[in-house]
Amino acid sequence: MDFNMLMSKIYVVVPNLNGEDYLQECLDSLQELTIYHQIVVVDNGSTDESLSILDSYEDIIVISKETNTGFTGGVNTGIEYALSREADAVALFNNDAVAAKDWLEKLAKGLGEEVAGISTSKILLEDRKHLDSTGDFVTIWGVPFPRGRHEVDSGQYDDNQDVFGASGGASLYRAEMLEEIGLFDDDFFAYLEDVDISFRAQAAGWKVKYAPQAKVYHKLSATSSKLGKDFAFYHFVKNFILLYTRNMPTKLLIKYSPLFIIHLARLGVGSLLRGQIATFIKSVWATVKLTPQTLSKRKHRQSLRVLSANEIDNKLYRGLPPRPPALQDDD
Image 1 (spheres, helix red, strand yellow):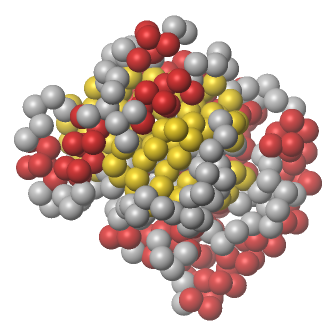
Image 2 (cartoon, rainbow, N blue to C red):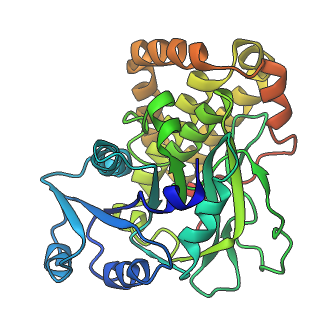
Image 3 (cartoon, helix red, strand yellow):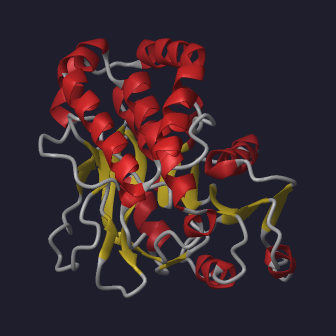
């Protein structure tokens, strides 16, 4: 696809929930981007002054929802709007982040390769010194993690390269890919949904490109912290299980099941020590109830897979899993 054509049909979708403290700074930065785009804000039932702030922007499309449908429900609404208007690509952007002026332009160049389905950013924390994410990876334990989180940015991740996954907080998705593999999985609601769609993209033969020149500055967990630790832990555990059981080829599902079970047990023991065992049990039970959906979605995803199990295995991170981001004390 011609690069100039791609630039003319980009939509930037911003999900918002009670983001009055940082929404304006986010939108102001998006309005200063160097290439043409249309901003779509999907408000997930905010009860603060978010809608009043949005009313002051005449050139931003606002889609208001009565209730919170999660990150997945919010971004899917925006993506569907963009695809219905023949978008070539759809960017997702967190409401608690600020974009460099050439952010979108650099991401668009990352989609220049024929098979690139997703282009993702170098995301720094708001101090602009420490990293939040330089691409997501999945371990053989089934545990996903953002590369470089909390490291001082000294240029150690400044090479353009393929990565396993893209952060849903600041990435660009090719419309053709979304139409092939589907949108974000609503069963995830929040957390790891971006790794899930990246896993599906990889399996279907689409590459995920890391564009280190595309810089974003993020107030880490500014939105999710308002929802509480139990909310984060519940969805992380549930989605950790869904990510593994819905995406791993059967050969790898069996091969790495001992490691997966060990890590799940680790999460359970940790929840007991923190007084969250009831939340852990609730999250595991939620995945049990979702078994019919998991079997159906797994069958569909495996039917779209073009990479062999060995090729996917080679993309997995071999090291020990780091501490889950949703459980870090400073998130």
